[in-house]
Image (cartoon, rainbow, N blue to C red; front, top):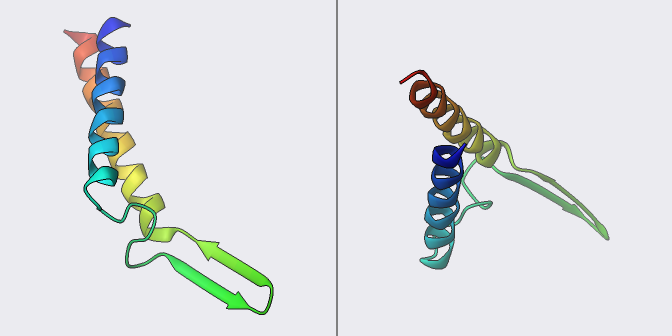
Length: 68
């Protein structure tokens, strides 16, 4: 459990640094925004795919570390 908390903490720090240095997380190419009058629809497709890949890698690392 301790290793998982450390890994999640490091991941949170990494994401925070990326946001701080101006990486457009949440505004990637492939994120769709439709504005019509006072209605706005936002579909973060690329951001969702990126988050899915990162979380899958984190889960795989945690599974690997738990078997050691």
